Image (cartoon, rainbow, N blue to C red; front, side, top):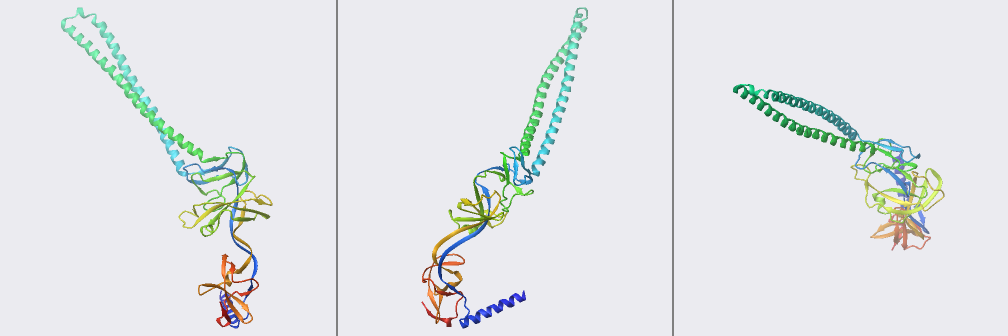
Length: 399
């Protein structure tokens, strides 16, 4: 650390001394060339058309199983399983409640059947007593008036008891039907809820919608392929089955870079997995809404799509690409380094080397980048200009 600082200090002293003497000031020869302002951003290859298997709607969980990238699958094969602990807990609870409701329904039916049987036995017993009393009534003519009155009262009592039993039996039937319907309704509601929960459980097992090569989708939070344990949510792409005839490149740009990129800007690609392959295309889509890099982050990225219009060999889905986006291209123009342009009295100037020293030459700049600038006027080409500002004693004339 100390040695680096010492070397840097020597360099400053050297430049300062050289500047005073007017010697060894680095020069740049102005010449016509091509001005390029480009950004290099990473992207990844995706099919233009693909069938996508997504996370079930209204679900938020983690990936428990995910098919290996590049696996050939048949329609209906399991490609992903999503784990949601809350759904499993709710399912188990509803299932327990339904089993308890079924037990209560069976128990209620048994209890009510027993009550009905006891009351029905009482009714039949009353009928037997009525028949016996009817036989005894045949002997009334041989009885004394007091005995006749007693028999008549016994028969009246049996008739009243019979009517009471019949009403009680009818009421019991109504009560039993109501109580059983209530238990059945409770059981039916739980059964329907359990079926709904079962459907949600089944939906957590995501299956291939068609035959083809399964490609893991990209995690929007990391920009990398999805992995087991990654969080997933409502309708988030999990696995794609591409059509290989046409490909595109997905680019995730920072907010700073995004604002400089325009639709139809030219893009050239190189691929780590295919070092001898190159491709060319253009920006075809810019997302108007940025996304957070991660939850709670203030840093956003913006998604863009770029076409692959020509290539030596079409790259496979999932390949990473270095995307060189051409923001501005001007051919056959005067280009100088930005560090050779200085501001003096609100004017842009360069210091042209001549036999007497340096001359401050006002220039008008055209398009520029962080490294280079186009000279619209003020230079003709062939001039040698200073890369660092000379000392005032070396500047002979200002314009």
